[in-house]
Length: 234
Length: 238
Ligand SMILES: Nc1ncnc2c1ncn2[C@@H]1O[C@H](COP(=O)(O)OP(=O)(O)O)[C@@H](O)[C@H]1O
Ligand SMILES: [Mg+2]
Image (cartoon, rainbow over all chains, first blue to last red; front, side, top):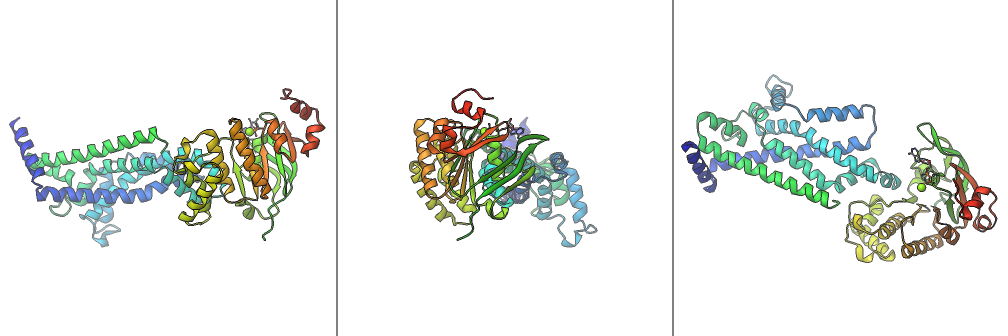
């Protein structure tokens, strides 16, 4: 009990004195996750739209696979990326293992299916509404995709935030491909695991508070966005 | 001057969905001038016929041909749907959208759209979200958006079905103006008064087939088929 009280006090001290180690870890977490979300969105959002407006042979199967990929165990993704990037792997020459780039790659693989799947659902509803108009206006495929993405942007932002929420709290894959190296690949989740193991509860809790704050903020943002989504037509 | 896309010729054209023939075979020609009214009871195939002509409904048999190759004809026609489709954008951006598709720079497209909006009585609604407009305003927006590209032919599917008298009058005025400006119009309606006010010629649909075609005065005075006669008299035609 005392440990917890003391830990809480120390944690807040670290936060309010803007402890440099803490800031570094938070900064890297944000950098990795935001980059991963942006890349995953660049792939996932148009992919979701593309799957809606194109009829091809294995469309239903592709969508089923996409939905299944949302449940990919991060540890397995980590292992896969590790093998790809390790010195003997196909991309070993780039020397990316144990760098933030490796962590971004792993996160992109984890959240792209999630973002693409939410994008697909959103765009599908909008396409049902717009279909006749966009066909009548003689739009190209690309014009259809951009119109749907633009007019569905609110809901798509929700998809991005969902991706952010998943990525910022992820630990398994990040640990494997990043290696949790101090001042290099250490992020919020991996250092919480490390500090807890070492018995540094104050630091671990400080990090935990920051992580929770980030996650809660994002969730509140999502909630209010999806409410305005329902309340208004965009 | 480029070649007109008209006349439009339907030659044994059939619309079939999952083995069921909805409309056809239809032989029909839409000439270069006039305002054709497509009439007929509910379910007689008016909507399907218009969609077939515009290319929204796949041609399952026969031919639907413009005077120019299909690819050239596509962008020179517009269609106003029975329930107007509002994009989730401002009024001005809805009206500007067809111009932007054609590569008109955004600023110029918006200022042109603002002019059209004003002409259609939507001048005060430019910045309002289109999905929140009233029924009549939505239909006027749809008309402005359809006409802004200055199509050679405009299809309308019962554009006044859910509107009150004033909105109907405004829309009819717009249509007469468009016709005077040289736009060919093909419009489905089952409002007999509207048909009499606007039509230069009539296509009467019955049971998925073109049952009768005639210049408007002849059709209203002396319909040749019993079904058309009953329909004009306001009897229930099934
Ligand atoms: N997509 C579709 N699938 C099956 N039947 C359809 C479809 N669209 C229209 N129909 C049927 O085709 C017939 C003609 O419909 P429609 O062209 O909408 O008539 P109208 O516009 O004159 O009321 C109706 O019996 C309708 O139920
Ligand atoms: Mg109809």
